[in-house]
Length: 137
Image (tube, rainbow, N blue to C red):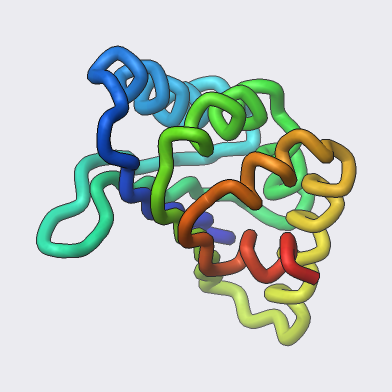
């Protein structure tokens, strides 16, 4: 299993309607994407991030399905302009020496296939973690 996590700090000055739309999109990722086996989403406490989510994906094929699913892409398009600070990370309970590189390659393919999405990522004030490594390579 791969546990794909994201952490977000929202920009100042966005409306509650914008926040609600972005958060609904995140919840929809867990509910609507067949590759997601389970998920948790909620407010993050006692840190510099506002919201976090973790999506459970069975393998790299499921990870790719998740990345390119229209619900995920819509969530990125709506959410990235509202985010000041973004971090992504991946945890696996299956040892695989090349897993990190393979995940980064999937992320890279995702960005290369959608230059508009890559441009939105470039607009983040802070972007760290597995998706940032793929985006910068």
